[in-house]
Amino acid sequence: MAKTSRASFGSKLGIILATAGSAVGLGNIWRFPYMAGENGGAAFIFVYIACVLVLGIPCMVSELIIGRRGAANTARAYSNVGKGSMWKCVGYLGVLTGFLITGYYAVVSGWCLEYIYGSATQQIGTDKAAIGQYFDDFAADPVRPVVWAAAFLLITHFVIVRGVRNGIEKASKVLMPTLFILLLFVVVASCLLPDAEKGIAFLFHPDFDKLDGKMFLGALGQSFYSLSIAMGCICTYASYYSRDTHLMKSAVQISVIDCLVAILAGLMIFPAAFSVGVEPDAGPSLLFKTLPNVFHQAFLSMPVVGYIISLLFYALLSLAALTSLISLHEVSTAFFEEELHLTRKKAAWIVTITTAVIGMFCSFSLGAFDGLSLFGLPLLSIFDFVTGQIFLPIGGFLTCIFLGWYVPKQDVRDEFTNGGTLRGSLFAAYLFLIRFVCPLCILAVFLHQLGVFNI
Image 1 (cartoon, rainbow, N blue to C red):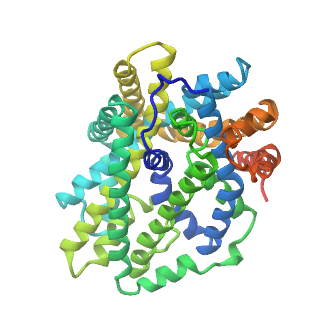
Image 2 (image 1 turned 120 degrees about the vertical axis):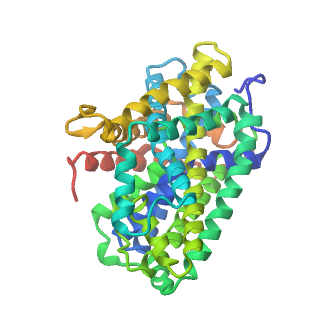
């Protein structure tokens, strides 16, 4: 049971916005659109939504149950729920994953700030070659990316040290509505462009010829990562939930917001891309090498508008990155605060400084210094691979096994139904999914990412 002295969110709106903010990030606004572009538009969306229902929501509910019942940082929460068992290692893995992601995610977040600056000062250029060269020169610079990453971490630090209600909750109530307003503004501007209807049709017209096993596994993986499963974020935030919070309802609301942002991101990108003849499957380069050119070319007759839209787009990306980075930072801050018995301020400084160092070396590995690589890949790519394709699937798989098979069924039901005050009509379906379906799906995605399993 939760301790009365533990910090908590002050309102249901704060709970939803803060937790949704942890899920809504660059994965929604960048990764989802290009994956939809590569996998048949609406066909991918249909499969993705099904994966959220079957995999994402049950896994999220599992983390919410562990976090609220454990009433502690992610590492200790698993230990509390498992009553001191060896399963606490899963909690430590979640903290480690969130900590490592914080370091390299700050670097990518800092790129968004650079592009805000570049758009505002009109330094990025207007042709494709110049835009591509701008990013390459920036990424190879030994100073600028590190400065922007440090700035992003300091902004995050300022929110974290103010606590759960005065920091995280208040920031979420400002950042999430602002994110939606910016997103809707750019969506409307994009949809008013010439030939924008082609992009809209592409997004909502399903190409079922691309419906295959690879696309299915890609949608499964995207649903898992997009909702911030196994990063410690959901579990940590749930430890601040009140006992009367409806966990299943909260998971559904958060997932709806997450999916809505992803679809709106598609409506923002594809109409503009089709308007200037850019292929919708531009891949990972879409964010920093393709989209600036798209916006400038789309508003060629109104260059000032093009710069404004580009500026707003990267402001939107920065807000999405910030809400996610706040939750990632909080995972480690709560851990150090409780395990080392430190003040929140000291714990936050430990996280900020150490992740800034990690981010610095990740940034250096992209070209500023030779030798910062493993297996021919820069450190940033190594961190991304290890956390995203190894730690997250392992953590999610073990969480399902832990809650589905180890924790007493009555304890799980008690949290699911808020001590019997809720009907819990979906409990049997939820338990079946986390015992059988979710572990098998996560295992399939894991093996597929490692090249062991292909369909």
